[in-house]
Length: 95
Image (cartoon, rainbow, N blue to C red; front, top):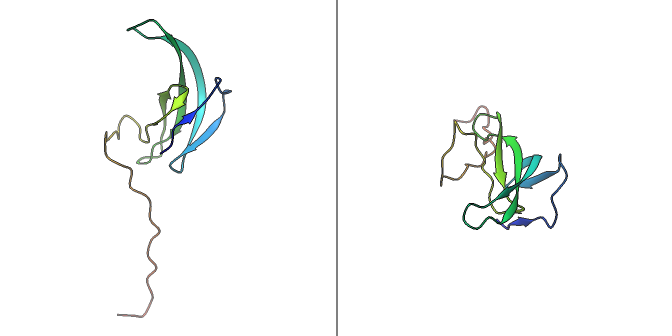
């Protein structure tokens, strides 16, 4: 997945799609790193959990490399989300 890099802080309400999952920007705030005190922007996104469809929030910096796809309850670090495949059509009357 290619990283999405914002040059400036996007407007609240901005929607992006990552791996067919939509994320809505809920807000942003300036933070400073503990190690060197350098400031950065932390973006807060909302989306629907791929397991239970509940809304959850996740964070990123201006360079969006990865966003969580599941809520805290259904977290599975390192395990990919299974794509929802179309149900195979069964033909009636055939045995």
